[in-house]
Amino acid sequence: MKEQFEGRMLRIHFGESDRWEGKPLHEAILAKCQELDMAGAIVYRGIEGYGTSTRVRHASPWKLSRDAPVMVSVIDTEERIAKLIPHLDLMVGEGVIAASRVEVTRYTREAKS
Image 1 (cartoon, rainbow, N blue to C red):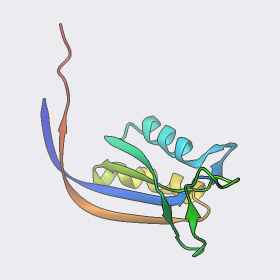
Image 2: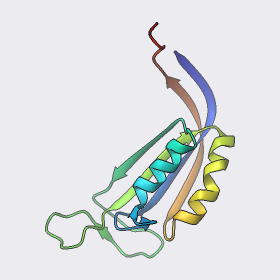
Image 3: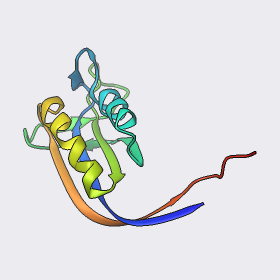
Image 4: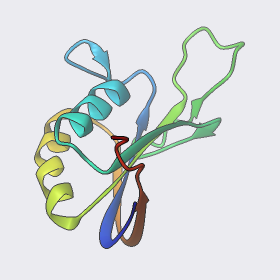
């Protein structure tokens, strides 16, 4: 089945070492997205980057601490994204969130009878 709609995409940028309630922040955000039944979310681990602190974060197997830049991309309708924002306000201690309007095409398999 094919569904098309105007939507919103959030890109949430932070560091791999960031946590929420004892678990990695990216896992907590992904779990919240599933709980809110968001249309889609994916986690990207970067090679190198910096954000609001201007501290460069590295993804290197030779470093003792692992603090690669991480981005979670979430796509859904404007209304559903609006329900996620208050949770992100609590969860993201340091980072950047970018939002943009997008045209979404979602493909789903029809349930087999």
